[in-house]
Amino acid sequence: MNVILIAVISLGAIALVLAAILYVASKKFAVYEDPRIAQVAAVLPQANCGGCGFPGCSGFADACVKAGSLEGKLCPVGGQPVMAKVADILGLAAEASEPKVAVVRCNGTCANRPRTNQYDGARSCAIAASLYGGETGCSFGCLGCGDCVAACKFDAIRMNAETGIPEVDESKCTACGACAKACPKGIIEIRLAGKKSRRVYVQCVNKDKGAVARKACSVACIGCGKCVKTCPFEAITLENNLAYIDYNKCKSCRKCEEACPQGSIIALNFPPRKPKTEEAAPAAPAPKAAEAPKAQA
Image (cartoon, rainbow, N blue to C red; front, side):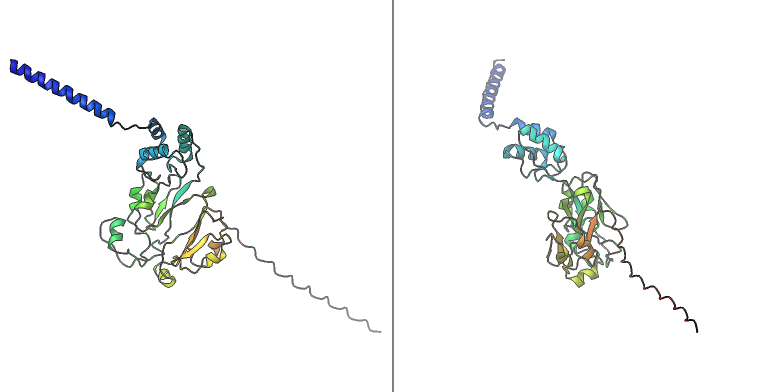
């Protein structure tokens, strides 16, 4: 009995000593966490999409609090209303930001880009891209396996069965960038949505020379440079046989759209153009009246 009692007392003493050590260690090595981090995280949408550039909403909240400024920080899912709440919690000013949307920069539909072979592997763009250039002569365009659709957490993108090209639902898109990261060809870009959701962009990423690009796709950019010369705002650059429109400089005049011989430049959500009225032809001169015959004397 004494042996058992001694063992119990010994174990109790050891437990008390270890508990004291753990208590001292917890106090000495305690990590202070600003309570505002939890407050900021509570107003975030908890989508954990990574569109803000940080690992999840908690990482974004931590960055906002520690930075002491909201410059360059935006929650793409919550947008400006959420950033206003974050600013109120931290006592900072929220930068005004224009809405953005995902844009598919490939118009290589089944009609525009004929198939030259058939891919019979796993239905994954990442796998297909690592194996070969694709089912058509264009090695830059969409592979059509739908990795972007699987990556979107908001059901904002789907594959069009007829064209084989992904389509973005602007009403659902949060511009989180998950689809752009999932695309191994880089055909999806996050661009400014524009006023009234109107935007002008080059719907092609083909960097081949003109003749090669045109042979692979009937609407491919051929790098002719006509759009560059036409733009009055210097918003278009030409590099590696491919034109690109800077949405920060573009004024949506649409002159480049008219100048493009390939139809590679897309003007989205604009009203239809008014038909040009033909100049009135000059009126033909009125025929001279016949002279009355002179009376004979």
